[in-house]
Image (cartoon, rainbow, N blue to C red):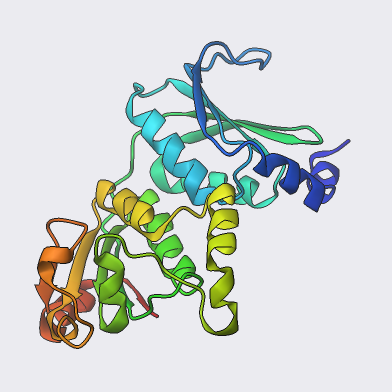
Length: 250
């Protein structure tokens, strides 16, 4: 069966069966490829959010020397093919091989040298709901994984997202189903907002808080989950936006 035929045969049953394997495993050992030897093997099956798997792959590659190889195994889920290729192109790693079976994809990636990247992203986040945070934090994480300098400005109700113990909820009539939705998202790789923010900080993202939003939304700086937050207002972040290449508003 050709690669295209394999990719087109992805069904909901594959995803559902994959969700039962919720953890990422990093193993040492030899690749089953004919001629390539992997220094490490990353098992990302059960996750269908590409940024989750790529973040784990990036952490593994940090421990390897240039030219060493990691083998990434995922569910046979079409977005992985384009996303892992795009990530390698952006970060200087070499995608040496991609293999498919009915259930799995295997990517063989050789660690390369990151190219110079002076691209900057400035994002204004004004939302605090569970579903509303998915896209902004997902795009921010994707940018950081590609070596883009990320700046996030939280304003309005979004300042609550940065506080200890905050749990985003679904909006409107769906609010009672928040726990069920959050559990399903976590299984697929949509980890919590706080976990994504920790990943972003680990990747060098800078986080700004609108000082004028704190009192109206009853947020005390002592309640923040994260350190090194910059409490500023519009003029400071305007200077950041002026120098940014990518602007996103939510």
